[in-house]
Image (cartoon, rainbow over all chains, first blue to last red):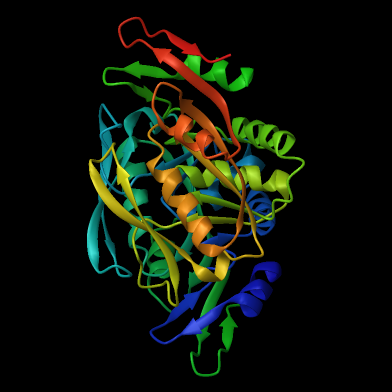
Length: 192
Length: 192
C-alpha cells in the first residue's frame, strides 16, 4: 500500500539490530487518519469474507483494530497479556515469546467473546517472527471459530513470521512488507 | 449520556467488591459504534478547547481514545506500562498504583510526543480511585503541555477519584457516573 510505504519512508527510523521505529505514527503516537485508510484497504481485500469479529492483542494492535472494525461494522476483541482479577469464567490461553522483551508471557481471551459461530479477522501492527500471531491463531483454533485471515500493517519480510503463516495456507495481507533495510544509510526496500 | 447508561444497565454486570464488568462492550470486547458516539459527545463537550492531542494509557483506553480522536482530528499518544527496548531517548515517567492488580507499575511517554506546544485531552475507559489519571496528569504537567480536560466513559462516583480531580479544577467529563450499585439485585443508580 503506497500510502503506508511512503509514510514509513518519511517517518520511520531504521536502527541497528533490524529495528524499525514507527512510533511517531503507528505504535506510540498514533495517526488515526492513516489507520482509517489501512482499515479501508483491509475491507477491500477481505470483502469476500463473512467476517463478524476482529481479534487483536494489546497494546499497539488495539487502535488499528478498532478503527479497522468501523469499516467492517464488527466488534473487536483484544487478547490480554496477563490474567486480571476482573476476568472471570473460562478463558482461552496461549503462551507467546516476545523477542523484544526476551521473555514468555501468557495471553488470554474470555470464552464469552470467541466461539464456533465466529468468523475472525486478526489485525496487528507488526509481524516479524510471528510469535504473537501464532498465539492468537491458536486461540482462534481452540475456540472453533473460522480464521478468515490476518491483516498486518508492517511486515518484516526478511524475518520468518510471514513465510510460516502463508505456508499454513492462512490468508495474510500485510500492507507494507519490508524486504531489507539498512541502519547506516536509512534505506528501506519494500517488496513489490 | 443516556446511550451509555442504557448500555451499562443492559450489558453491565455488578459483582461483589464494587466490581462492574463491562467487558462485553467496553474493555475486552469493544463496540466501536458505541465508541464513536462517546467520541462525538466529548467533541461536543470540549468544542471550545484547542485540543491538538489525546493522551491515554494502555490497554483498554486505546480503542476509545483512537475513535474519539477521529472526531477531533488529532493524534493519540498512549502511555506504556513498561519501558520497552524499542523506546529510545528520553521519556516522561510516572508511578501508578493498580488496585485491580495490587501493585505499582511505571508508565512512560516519549518526550518526542508530548511538549509545551500541546493542548491535551486525556481519555480513559474507567475512573475509580484515579491513580492512572493522576499518573497521566503528572506527565502532562512535566511536559509543560496544557491539560484541557479529561474524558472518561464510566466513573465510579462512589470512589474518590472523580472528586479529587474536580477539586483540582480540572474539567472532567464522565459520560456515565455510577452513584451506587448492588451486587445482590444488580441494580445500578446513575448520577443525574
